[in-house]
Image 1 (cartoon, rainbow, N blue to C red):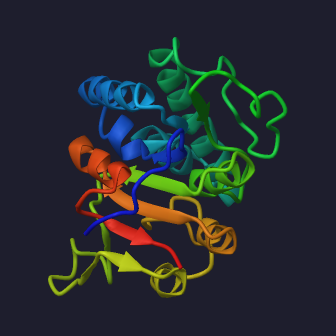
Image 2: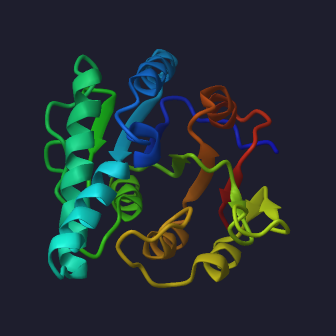
Length: 237
């Protein structure tokens, strides 16, 4: 399918899945390729908000804690949040010469980010009850970004889990109403959906476009940003 062409000096939010950063261990090859990809787009005039997920780091902490003690959803959320913050420090470090020096940990606190000269803002998880997808939408709302690129190891949205159901139908485009029928309206820690249901509600309200793409194919991501033919799912109204 083909995306809308980008605007000059557009600010784009990238929700960077932990599955790409830490699939098993830290993926240095992906980080190197991702840095080249982002820097190339910065040179074309783009600006980015990079929001990091927790990946296997988060799941391992949560699983280990649960083996030893009975833990609450709030415990799970905080362990996941701190994993996202560790990943955010990693990402901000590799983009040191391009990124704002402070990692955003509260999407509602942007006092020193509105007029920042740096082309990259790195953000992490905020507080229990909210995913990094939700943080990405809030940051986009405040910083005037209308497109969110959700990168993970999934290339598009399906009607059901394609790993389990051979008849799962892939989608090129969905309205927010159609997408929310698939993922529901409630968020649970560790939930495995293409985009968080609570974040989806806010993205619909703010008239945002979310693209679900496989971050392992950065050429394909470039095609989406540039308005060329690409593989993925675009959710918008």
